[in-house]
Amino acid sequence: MQYATLKNKPRTLRSLTGFNPSEFEALLPSFSVAWERFVSETFKRSGRKRAYGAGRKAHLKQLEDKLLFILVYFRIYPTQEVHGYLFGMSQGQANEWIHRLTG
Image (cartoon, rainbow, N blue to C red; front, side, top):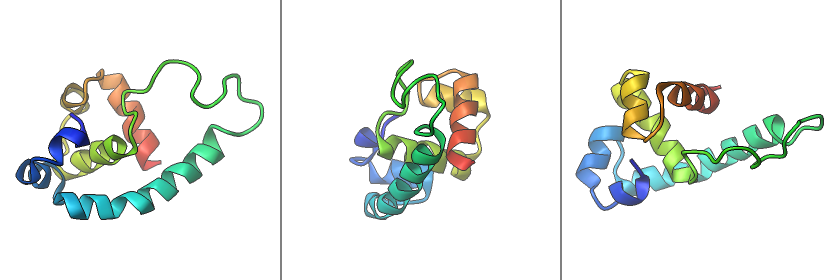
């Protein structure tokens, strides 16, 4: 599931997140600041074995998809297995993203 697809389906987006496309996009600047702070504190510190962006490619590449992922989780509280399926990842990866985005 990706925001690029859902932004053209406002009724579905509202059902999954509680927000219409304009409300969702209004959240992006604040979410972007929080995400960049998290990245700088967590992934850009010295002593890391890999640089930020190295390693396997993330399932949630776009900032909009990260926000969609966590808003869907908070709105409908699916099991991690179901949530992972909705976003094309395993239960373990869904668990990692939930903790990363709520930590």
